[in-house]
Length: 303
Image 1 (cartoon, one colour):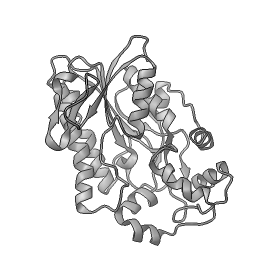
Image 2 (cartoon, rainbow, N blue to C red; image 1 turned 180 degrees about the vertical axis):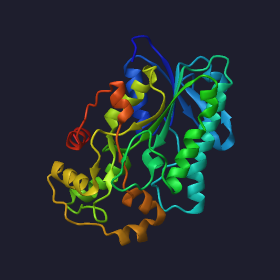
Image 3 (cartoon, rainbow, N blue to C red; image 1 turned 60 degrees about the vertical axis):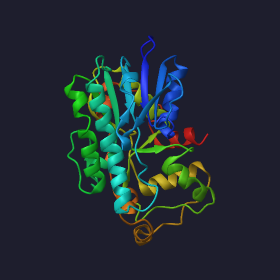
Image 4 (cartoon, one colour; image 1 turned 135 degrees about the vertical axis):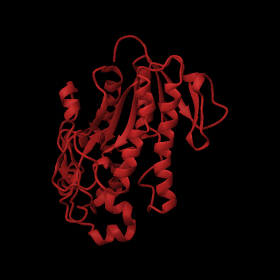
């Protein structure tokens, strides 16, 4: 980040990534405004944002230097019913559009909007190597991601630099997919999912937070950016590496039929699909990865 203090507004500020980002920005001396749903807001450090009611404290965003939009309904909270899928999509598309239109209408717009998206954009692609130039896949997640990213258009049309972060599997012991896996693997009951051949594109939470900060400060970076580690791995390698870091065996495989029976469409798209994504644009921009290998990332986040 530049040495001058910035004013950054963050949605999803209480979430796994958002809370770490806010703490990191404040530790560097930057001012953070958290976008929250509760009313009334508490002091100047909070801004009202409730997409479900089309509410946003627009006046509080006047003059902010950057907005990082991370909020959205969790995708892995349970089976995908029609109602849950609608909430997942609407929370992203409607919320992003509300923010983008609000920023476009300000007298003094921020210089940059960093908007979360996901590698779900690419769908199930087998062994195909994917970068930011690859076309979207097919299915609920790709369709959602396409609409999600398109919702940033009003801000972009108003001259705001927009960075759309396609985020991979975030590695953290405090939440997300890894935290759910840890009790099983620590008990020695972990193993590959399905045949283990599907590609997993991961990112350590430390690198992800640094990527978000990097995107705010790097004026040459815009458009779609893959927020993933340098080395995607197959599920069998991921589970073997995790078990090794924990000094546990990993031989209890979860068959495909069990995933489909337990989780339905959500299990197919999140657990069995293969997405081999590379961070081409971040590498070209000169971003330095703290955790270039999966083993380094797991050792770091697991202490």
